[in-house]
Image (cartoon, rainbow, N blue to C red; front, side, top):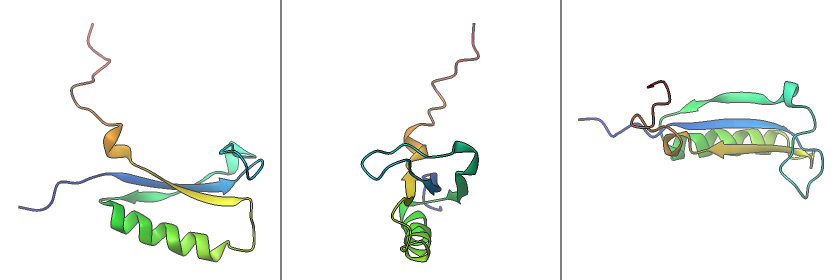
Length: 78
């Protein structure tokens, strides 16, 4: 049986300032992709971070989406 999928999302963009996590322009935030585990998300993060190392405001973040997804938390029921 394969390992349980633990969804991780990788996003990146230019921060308004390096002291906070607030993107300068949300319309330009890059949705890099979805990954089945932290290791794969981290590998992609490292690649993106190294590629943009010359821009201090450019940051990438791993979102632990599996912690946000709860099938029991269904807001569609009345």
